[in-house]
Length: 104
Image (cartoon, rainbow, N blue to C red; front, side):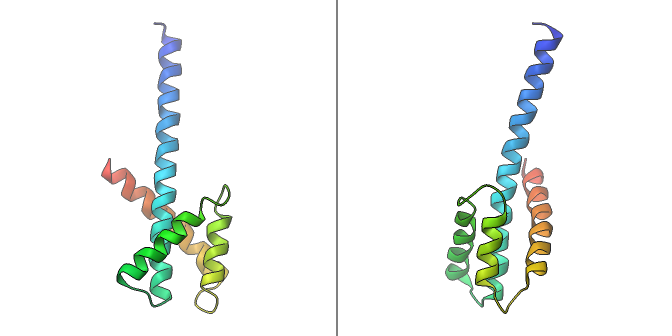
């Protein structure tokens, strides 16, 4: 093996690791968003967990965050404005990433 081959393999492994980390962090963020929104909606226990799963599954509609954002805006009308939802999405993305990294 040459040094070039080793570096190429290392970069591919890093890319795969980063992609997996991002996927897990997005899913965790969506669950945390769902739990936050469930609290605003007055849900608790199994109802809150079930609602959080609907937020997670809404992310499979299209690439990116807009599908989750639209769901939350529609569900939280009168409870949270768009700016608050975007801020919470950013905050919980960092929280989720930290949680995933600390579990590794």
